Length: 183
Image (cartoon, rainbow, N blue to C red; front, side, top):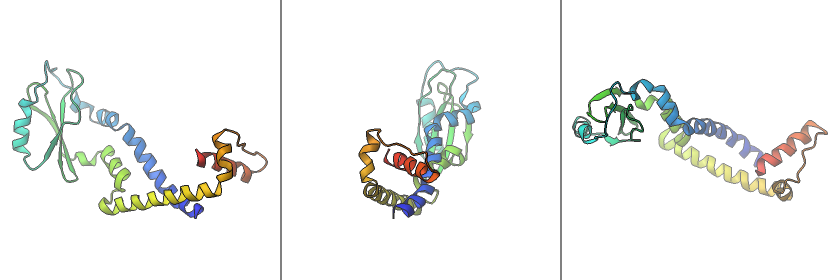
């Protein structure tokens, strides 16, 4: 049970880990990828959301309107994220005047949004969420069977007294697995 749960869950650990790494830096990745939209030609002296929110609400009445973060500098555009189901649009406006600078019509095709969908539902919507739930149950089985199998080594590993044998390749990987598995 421990072997098969580990093999199956390992595939998903890889997908979730890689997508999680991308999500860890999603703001930085998006800011770098779309840097030309964030930089203003004319810096804003103040932030006036009222100048843009009214026309955006009128033009995109069927869309949810979000502001992911306010501009941190005067030369930075105000970003609106428009949501309609899985569809996303990014609308860059001047923070002071409210004039549109750029529209990213397919914001749902960004690398970071795809990574988010892989991370939470494996790009498969409700079916993917069920698969992620089943993998979570596999992890539970993996943990319980690991506790049963390695119960004698548990305290040794946690107290840093478990040694990794270098006598053979099998003993080396067995000890390494025991230590990484417990931690």
